[in-house]
Length: 261
Image (tube, rainbow, N blue to C red; front, side, top):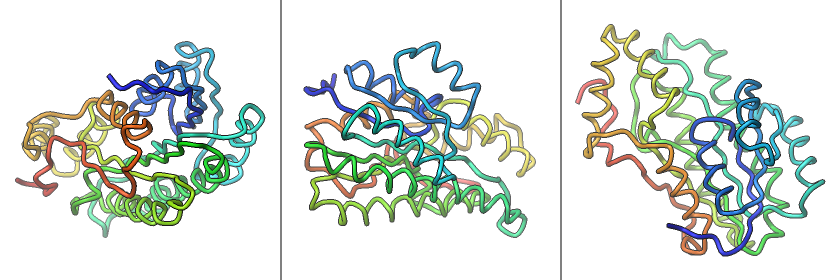
């Protein structure tokens, strides 16, 4: 088990549910000060019941003003942050590119790319004050492949890798490490919705699509949210002190993302 020697100040974006919530739990169990934002009122309400002592604020990461307000609240409580975890993201539409509505494309980019930019931009000044600063961006196994019927999502996730590697170069002189975790299909509500949409688009059953997703992975299984949380904890710990600029696959080895394999 990874143990953090120091009590870190950790910001988790979109931490009220799913992968983000597991990441919050992992850092909280280590005694860290965790600050969370999320857009879902229902998820925030449920989060407060489980973590009554953790600060959580409703913010839409696509809005720079809302992100700035979130960080203003953090600055009222601490002078620096040690870890920034960007886990906000949406799956976007499932359709051939010619059938994608421009508004859906824009929404996917605004949340998955612009939202990450907003959160990192506001976080950098506080990270510079840390003795062990780290940024962890959640990308996807789609960051390494083409992904038919998922062009907005795939484009955004390739952009995450570009941002990660560029920031690792820009921020290295401040000792800020920047990495991306690239999970495969992670068990939970989001992948269930994606599979359902994929099945509808391809005229197949949900069971057929899920079987195809599993078939595309060498280990023949989905990733669990806890796996992502554990890797995030590792990258933020002293054990990951020389890891930066990396896009780390956490997917049981994806062999491809074509419609048929």
